[in-house]
Every structure is written in structure tokens, then in C-alpha cells.
Length: 143
Image (tube, rainbow, N blue to C red):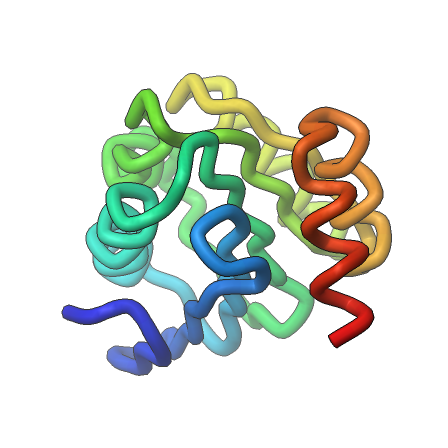
């Protein structure tokens, strides 16, 4: 699979560069399964390997209708996050149950994450933890 728009299964997702080679934007929507999470992981690996470390991910989950509750299986499916080139994953969600599941999963899978309620909050967080992004994001938003 090449980076770009990826749609498949019961839970379509779209993935593209938010900031070329540094920040990936992942948008989930619909019904998530463990298999879907696994497919997203496969595509994420390609972005991380193609990017300039650290590569951060903004995962917009505001349109997800259902999410797997088997935390062990879901944690096994999240393997990309352990790549040394991987930076932070910022998850955008306002669903309280999904936020609890995500916090638990991130602890089980052992990756760096932050939860935000909007893309603006996600962007501000990333600039706060990776100062190299500020100038790039500011320039990117002006073009």
C-alpha cells in the first residue's frame, strides 16, 4: 500500500501528510475492528519510514462509531508506534469512552500519546513538544 488515501473494510480511514515528512494526518470513521487497526498500522509504518524523524501522527477519531473493546488484541495490532523514528501520536476524540480505551491501549502498547479535542489543540501540543515543527507548520499554514 502506498501512502495516500486508504479506504477499506468496515472502518474506512484516510491517511496523508499534514506536514510533509514530519506529521501524518490519519482520519478514522465508521466501525473499527482489530483488523482495521492492523491495516492502519501497516500503512503508518510506510509513512514513518518515509519521513524525517521524529514522525508524529494526528489521529482524528471524531467520526468513529464503534471501536474494539478487546484491549489485548488491539494493543498487539498497534505495533508501528514502537518504531524509533516515531514521535508522538495525538488522538482527537471527544467521546469519553473512546478516550478511556485509547489511554488504556496506549499504556498497554507503550507509545507516547496525547488526547486533544481539535486539530488546533493537536497542532499546538506537537509544537510544544517538538520545537522544530513550529517554523515548518507556520510556513505551511501560510502557503
